[in-house]
Length: 201
Image (tube, rainbow, N blue to C red):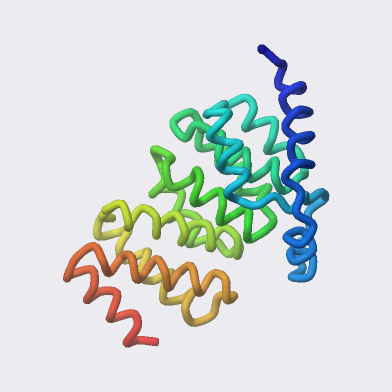
């Protein structure tokens, strides 16, 4: 059945009621994570929903505009990475205001962008916490998949990871530590470079 994007959004929002988990939503509020609307749907349920629907650029764009936790997470799962322009990624990053959405966007979408490495290196050098967090998460994912940066990017990464481990908020420190560990797994040279950062701190 062909539905307009607006009808699909309405249908999707109605489906969130069936996924509602008050305990999850309350736990987020207790931790200071406040969304305009939060049904407390679990990530596996949202992933099932995304798999049922398949990739859809227009729907992802429309869902992202909704100030609802589940809509934003679903948007990151539905957006086809090869169709997402760098300017759109910049807008989404600008509009990201929770750690959860930054982490979900990195895992579900940003790591697969054709220009993922370029964005990640820009973000880790930002002075904004969520940009740094997202950048380190994307790099972790890229390193896991065997991505080897060039010499200039290696120096940038090590400098930013060093700074983050010394002075960044806890969430960014954890993301930087993770990315350093995955960087070290690329091979002996990378392991030695990573160890040199740990020795310095």
